[in-house]
Structures are given as C-alpha cells and as structure tokens.
Image (cartoon, rainbow, N blue to C red):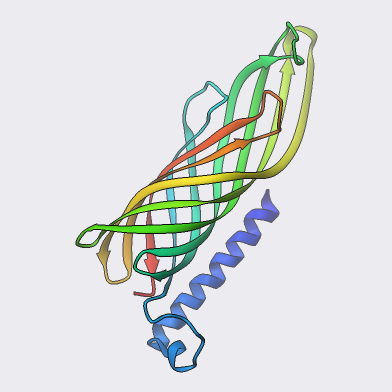
Length: 209
C-alpha cells in the first residue's frame, strides 16, 4: 500500500507543479500548439470524509483521498486519484458453510481513474457525475477464537466505480467539492471479505483558472 500511495502522490505532485507552471505561463501552451483546447484546465485537490465497507457491520470509518485531473471543456473531464478507506470489522464463519464464529477485519485503499461530467445548475455551481474503475488493495484477517486460529491475507483487483457530487467555485482558482463514490464488488471474491466500498467526502480543489 505504501508503494502505491507514493506513486500516486508523486503523480499528483507532478500535476501540481505543472498547474503552477501553466498559470505562470499565462496559457502559452496554446501558442506552442500543444493541441489543448483553450477551455481546458488542470486541477488537483484533497478531500476528507467517511468511508464504509458494506459487508462489514461496524458502520462508518474515517477516509479521504487526493486527486487530480483535466477538465477539457465546460462539461467533461478526466480524473485520477488515491483513496484511503480505512479498516472495518465484521463477523463471519470459519469456512464456507462453517458453524464457528469468526471475527473479520478488512483494511482497504484504492487508486482510480474516471471520466467526469459537469452540469452547471447555478452561477459558480456544478453538479458532478463520474464513472470509471478502481484498483483496490485489501489486507484482511480472520480470527476464530473458539479454536485460537487466526489467518491473514492480502489481495487486489479492479472494480467499477461511480460517483455523484457538487462543486462550488469560491475563487478564481479554488472550488469546494462534496461527493459520494462507490466501487462495486471489491475485496476477495466469493469470500466474507467481498464488499462494496463507499466514500463520502468534502474537500478543496485548486485549478489553473
């Protein structure tokens, strides 16, 4: 997980530096004929909120994400990011069809890529919809106290991702964003650890204009 986090953080740091240089350049990329629409701009941000792993019963846990992308015109863009989803606990069985109670833990994070649509509904306010994929990682454990047995595992995979939210422009280069995102069927398939993932968050986005 640390390696994945470091890679995504490095990517977003590079994006942030490029955003800064683009602002200073005053849009010279058009003069250089890079083929980017004059409406396009880059952005990056971070959000904090609550996450939920639906197959586990301990409710909401702290979560958050960092993200960056390009808005290619007023209504369409693309985004990548890293989600920290936290650790959840639940109950299961010692084996499929088993009778012994097992205590389960699931610690998850994910990187994602998505297309993003924007719908202006008022001055400075857009509704957001997104669809893409999330590559998740899960560290899990199962403890059967009746027989003093504990096992751990790590797994990763790719799941569909959707999201909805809203973004409000509070300044020339700053937006407040709130959103809900859901990944389907994450976790080790056909086990007690297969689950949907939800992240509800609020954050700040900075853009080139």
